[in-house]
Image (tube, rainbow, N blue to C red):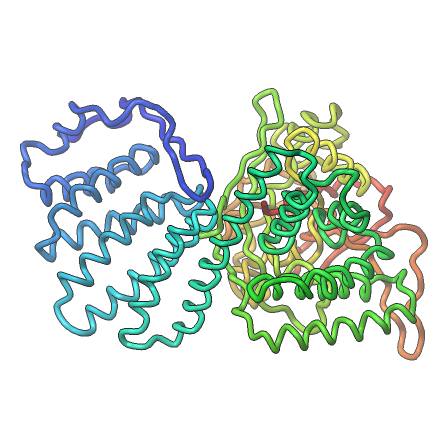
Length: 563
């Protein structure tokens, strides 16, 4: 008889802490439960297999599944001599990855994968192909472990992992070897940087007026760590006025910086900070400079003479960046994006869940504004902001069709912005509206087809509340629905098509007629994406309206910047 696992009280809460995971003190799997699963089996291989079978049979109790699979991996690693035992262990590891990839990163899985593939590579590779396969899997696991160590600023651990990776990649020589060697050199460099930071912090603690230590800390965090928010903590009235002016601007996203300041930020990043940056930090400074150039050049408020100067600066920055031949930006998948799911507590038992979205590697040439977000991952709400979420922050519910789990509507663009400001103040995370290109990227899941599920709109009804399954069915169906009642897209986002239109940050600019300048819109006109329950939600369509306007079918969802 199978044990009644649903009666076991066990909560496993994984919290990301500097790239590592930790479990809160909760009730573990009981000895009685484990003995009933083992059913008299004494060998480690047999116990691993029974634990895997029991975990596989569970479909609802995810924390218990994870705990059983971890136990199966631990037993499996003790008995890898047989092919069957190795298959059991690898299957348990794969299931753990699938169960936890939407949650926080778990160093247990990475550590055990390294241990497993290292043993398989050294002891249990039957032929050359099997050895090469285990070698590649070991390299991937070691690189993931190195990234965890970097997030925790454990540069010695990162160096150790990359050293082994470089050794493996040279036997036989991998095409990724030059890139891996650069990562090792960067880890060695960052260990020295961290040592300098530790020394400067010690000096500043002994003497709070030590200007040299304060300046060193600002430079290290701002340039080498590319972390202006941390650098801002060391600003005071004695620090150079330029730093006191520009560092606060560097903390916010480029599209939130005034156009007039973008040209100064472009020069500061691309010409001042990049000049004194190390070889490892310089590409980031140059990229930031180019992003601010794009921000200025895409603005309708730009000055034509300044725009010409920014074009020249941008060209020079790109040329210098190409000469450095840096590794391409790391583009993590959602399953490996650090902190891939975050939850914001709004009070009164109400929360908001957001999913980590990787930056887009390339964008079509005509989407210049997309370059502002191409280099940065971000979090976006898994659903549209609901009426209960809006009321928890704003204290009112302006919606025409009431329902706590329904999307809030009849909110203006300014209302949405005000919600983001109050949400930021309440949670300590920087919340804002998505840009159009962030929204489109999150909607399409990085695919190039008309819809994320393919080029045919025939399957749209599985993912969206739209004209066909709402308005066309009669007056009683002519309204929006509770969020997350249709299937999510590949990145776990619900209602990206249909239900309600979603305000985005971007202004609407009317297209120019041939041979004429584009007409200026009357007032502040903003865009909305996704369609609502009355539209066919065709790909590429968007709406626009006055920023102060309020409509029954218009809501929004929130983006939180990646930290």
